[in-house]
Length: 310
Image 1 (cartoon, rainbow, N blue to C red):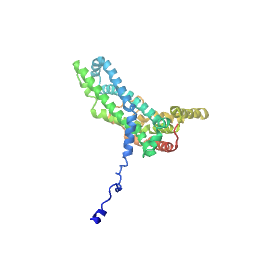
Image 2: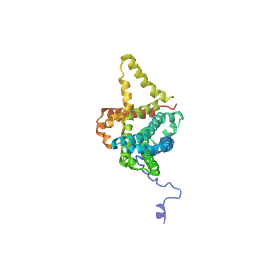
Image 3: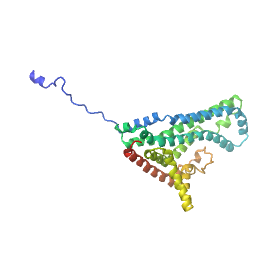
Image 4: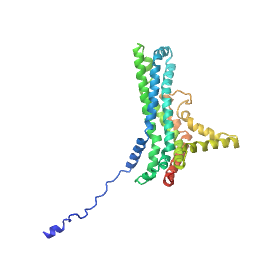
């Protein structure tokens, strides 16, 4: 009896500690991205508000739609397709501009806000590395916002199509001018490709803004804008050249020319045949920009590790 009782641990004795459950390597990144999404509601509220405003404006102007459909019926198919595509493009343009501005201001505040309100001291106490934190913040303009943009654009175009169908059918007109043009596949793939192109093309801009966000003690917008403008002015005065200005202009507006057949500021993109991913992938500016973006994001990781709160 004594021998058996000696093998039983005494009451209150420390039990063997159980091994902690293994945590998936991607778990901190997943929750960091969710935290950024929760704290930045403007990511989807702003484009949704703009889309609602666009649809409201189209609803008000729907009284002129029957007359427009009658005019479209008299045009040749190519001209008619271009006009309808232009209408869909005009609806998508304010949404893309809004999401770009949301991405810009998000990057400017991504690392600066947590230093300003000193919440960085709390986040650094958690078992989340600076690399994971910066990657989660970079995923917002590079992954989350583009997905939100594509979904809202496609939904807006479909609602526009349904609204136009209802108005035209109510007036007893033919639905052919509306439904012969916009294959649903093109309505989905063209904005998906266009948003992906712009995101990759703007990657160095987002990297620069996030670097400034981690470095500036105050007014990150001014620190992000004034140095490039000052360098452009210095080059113009000192050397009478505008190479830097052309580079910045190309980075802001050159994605269409690099990714589409005959793409340009005024081009109407609505056909799959106008997409040219091979030319885009072969563009040196794409890879140079991505390399610069990688360096800038790496510098942002280093800054977050050593930069003090404001």
